[in-house]
Length: 409
Image (cartoon, rainbow, N blue to C red):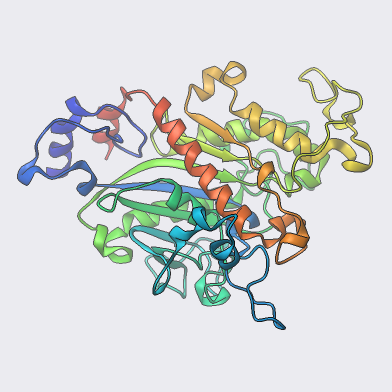
């Protein structure tokens, strides 16, 4: 095809790969008709996934009903407060909340529709899914349900990418509340061998997770219908540029799922790279850090080592089973190339989030498992995901399989 021939022409000048079928480019020294820049030819696609904290519960402008001032911890509070106004002022302009037309967001939730069996795509915006310029409102339920008063990590992620106005970005967010990695997002590689931590009836070790399959379905359908959903991108070539993961509450509710988390996360990374034909796809993992930093009091101290019985950890009253601590430890370990170098290869970055924890008295809510609905926490998590993507992208080498991928298109 003409597109294929054009991309073959570009191969000698591609310096870095991140994508479904082609490469993410550094600043090249070449000319295309009318000297178009690479940013005007390509669409960078990022997939964000997880459970309710990826859906997003950061509150935008909930007001104190007595004083009619924004509640502490809302986004509007951050914009106005001297401690945070410098960082958050980018989100507000003279006409209201800022938006970025060159960064589009797609989210599987819209009102009462949450796409649990795969969204109707191309479907109808704000009925079958939510889509539009990056701004507030793409939190739980989507703008049609939360009335632009909730947002998730996508906001900080889009802002944190620091894209110029002529760069085009699509953020695809697939997230559902109460979902785990062990069952719901279970990747294919976790179904190949026996898993002592996954047993019926709660966990089928040989069943690929329903929401893993739905995520892939949605991404495929969106990219196949770009001209309908995002007509402004119809002439651009989509590049899969990275995957962001923020999840962990539900696995941390079960000792077996906690023990299996590292291996399942390694398998998720490996399988998504295979699915999207990118051996070095940049991966960013924001740790499951709600609750903030807690003292490490594992008993016995080596209870989570590789050769130990991981089900015997105990952190006393702080965390029976050390589940929360061990989920975070597993997220760091999954990105450790020394442990998984033959499978991970490179380009996986884990970012710390525990420092973003804000107590309920400084937040709009006391739902600790939803970061107390604190807008500062949600925004900083998104920026951390973006920083991880940028770091992982910088590590990504040239992908020698690019020509084969092009031919497969």
